[in-house]
Length: 281
Image (cartoon, rainbow, N blue to C red):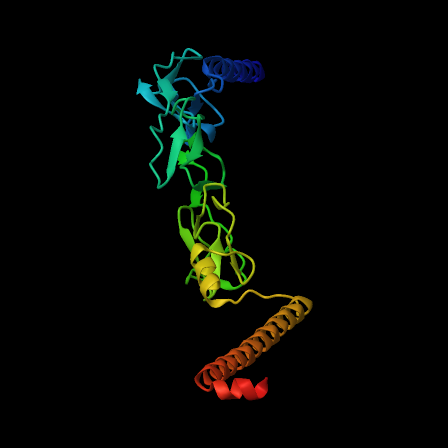
């Protein structure tokens, strides 16, 4: 009896060992993957892959199914060959944005980089590129309009600019001079693409700084030429001397005139009265 039990025990033990070995021989290892094909989350949670197990593969991040189902089976301790084929996702051209364009020389597939190009008069704010990710283009980039500083006030004039904001690219600032002053330079300047103006601000000049043709004509008709006090004194002295000379000459001529007139009268009277001549002799 004891021999029978011992024999039966050995048989059961050997049977269990056989079943275990048979099961171990039929179990498949964890499926391998390559760069663009990976196990699904459910397959990753599995520890054992016995005979007849079924596992699904999927495309890696940034890839999409081109063909196949991705299902593999464990048969005789080996996995069937996967039929899944994956390809990179194509983000397509980046969405257009105001005053912005893109250089897509690297293509538009997953991982590619598109360089941001801003229009003339705009500057880049943020990243200078966008990258194609699994969900599309990523990367914050913005093209903002160029600003110029408000010029300083002009002496004896003013700036024609009512806004509190800085002038934008292409905007024009004008200058006006106060009454009696004239612009020396351009009367307007434009904000350029590099944040600088196309011309230097003008100046407002007046008084003796600059004379226009109109000013010259006005000066010629309204301003008496000035002379020094010395010249004026000499000039006055010369006029007085000349006037006195002329006055003396006129008086002398007057005296001589009356003298000769009287002499003529006396002569005539003498010829008319010869007795006066005899008495005088």
